[in-house]
Image 1 (spheres, rainbow, N blue to C red):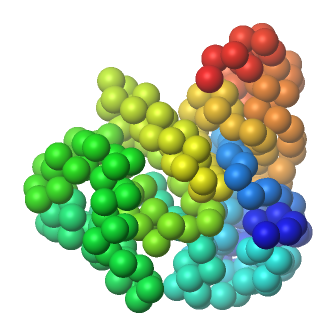
Image 2: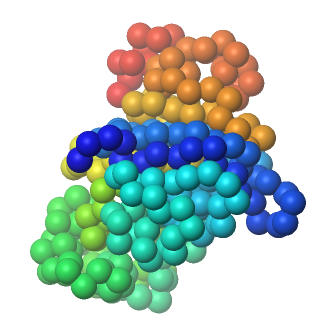
Length: 250
């Protein structure tokens, strides 16, 4: 695959006529990268990621997946282009078992062999393998987040979009969710993540964008953004991280 797996040019979008939430964003992701979008509440982060999977109408600009213009495409068409999406809320079917949730994830993709796909997922998420026949509603917050990621990974997408993966996860197990995201990336997926825990997310990212008032204000490697005094003061709630420490932590 040549060129970026995702390219966004001058993207403008919103929910109500005349009110733009995303205001001219440019963004690109190369295959194999982990890219993080951070920013304050109301910056347009979740709206941006919803635009990329076809859930919010684009008013201006262009979205390309692997060189193909998908601007205005329906969510199912974008998913079949190899894009997986894990929303922040209501991202599992609680009354279905873990295994049934995974099977639902395969339904829109007739070419997926569900047996091998499930075993691939259970190898990546051993906790889910242990609970494969249990209803999803009894899972912990961290396990639910793992299941949501697992279902999105069933068709082996080229690009995985994560909207606030640490939201609602107990602090005692949130580190496991981060570890699983890193394992997903190491397994070959390209990851774009919107996340409020900016320091932790940037610490594991190849690159990051800082979104504010619907625009990408800063761009750089994770280490560069963590060590930038202006970004630390405005968006990270304190002093910049030591560059070497940030690079060595993960």
